[in-house]
Image (tube, rainbow, N blue to C red):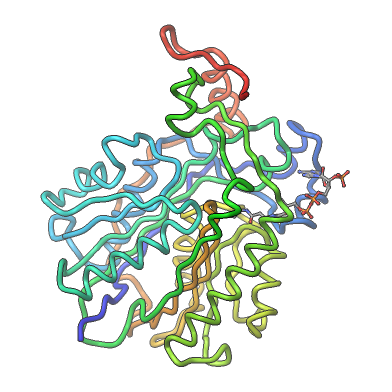
Length: 368
Ligand code: UT7
């Protein structure tokens, strides 16, 4: 039997920090409201494009695995905030790491894109189609945010992370998962402005309006992730008591606490970093995984549970058996280009481009 061991991991967080206090100068909100309702204190705003963020994360994951970019056979890029739809994001990473002619595709299930990518890449390794894979979760939400809407602007941030999978005869890596979707309720989380529907009506790329029914999303997130955790554990014949660490999607601390309670898992066995990054959509779980490893919260042979939830409304939970190695084999000196700008100034310039588009660009107009 072939398994797909996780042999490398790497993250890339842009350095500019946007705090709740910064946001309360831009919107009718407060640090007290954001922390008490979400657990978020700050988030990152990127000064570079999505490919750059993802490339740095990928380079670090490859170094951690001791795998040359030229040896990679498959790249799966999970995102919903593409630099370009065509060509896809994965092909850009393939070129940057020198992995020609590796297979390269994008997956978009919003916040669960990394986990769905982990599923497909693992399946392709386990069936012998490829011998290894680079799986990325990366998002650049800030250019697509409606920064005038306090209901959503306080929740999200930018970031990227990646893992390397390699074929193994040992029983490790992703062992079982539950994937699902509440398609009947898909309208309760919709970003108007991202997609051909809007481009064909002349809406300038990046001008968005978010349909976001927070409380309804909250309920579905708790139900979807809890049910998926139960199902994933049943598929590996394990109980919550046997889970060493939960590394959940981080959209709201109260959601994480509710899922842990329903699953019968104490918060001591749940990794939380939402306070520093907010919801980075598909980057959230792999960044948290990297930080759990850095914090020595993942022991050799640990059973991990990775529940996720996102637009669609997609939900899932992945049961992962960690291997023997919990430290990286190597590091790289690949870094992001330096940034001198505070997060608020990066945002101000982004908004300036939206309201004063380049000559010849489509014009912004209200959604109908
Ligand atoms: O990755 C998956 C996608 N996202 C999620 O899973 C998010 C799921 N939902 C949530 O996390 C929560 O529902 C939110 C954090 C979005 C909202 O928390 P809530 O406790 O459900 O608040 P609410 O929507 O019931 O709003 C309570 C009040 C409202 O005022 P009124 O109508 O009671 O006067 C809002 O207008 O809080 C107001 N409010 C704010 N006040 C200050 C909403 N956003 C803010 C804000 N600052 N940023």
